[in-house]
Length: 220
Image (tube, rainbow, N blue to C red; front, top):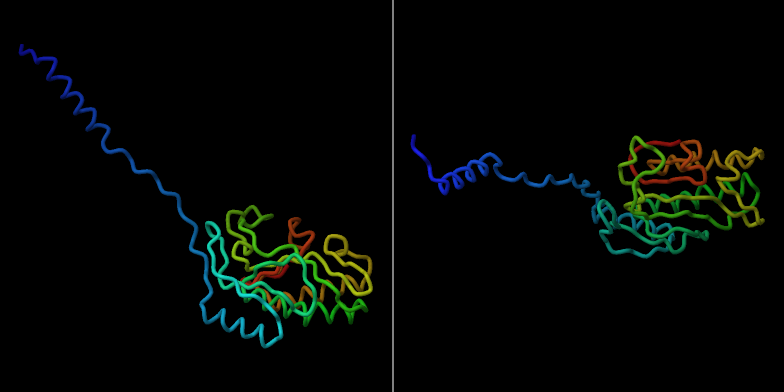
């Protein structure tokens, strides 16, 4: 029997073990979020022209990426729409245009005609927020319209006679005029925005209207 020297066996075994292991697997890359939609420059320019024509004052904001799937693109800061608005910051121009038109041509007339008092203030509850959709488990892993400043939340209104009407306290008001007011302004919003969510949608919207400028045609 031929004896193989031990110093030859060790390299052979080492080579065999390396061959069995093969190349180390490359790390699996996590799927990145889709690139956020950025409105064409011409679309934003037309939107800004519409705001100027309607006498809406605004400040143009620079495009800025603010996180994965989040950022400001074609956004403006409304400074005067004819009625004081609180809690509203950057908004994509198309959403800002729809919001200003809704307040001026739907909410303000409804306040006067149905509630009998001019509109004194709109109480916003935020526009831009880098976050996912909340309140719906089935689609909770998707970015909210707020992540692109393409949505605005409205919590209530103050009238010049001192009354404060909020969704949290007055959506199911015993006053038929207040209920009619909500019905009218939501119906108008549904004609101006792609997505309108109210307390009738889910518990996450019990205290505000979510108004988003998309093409979803979803009103609840």
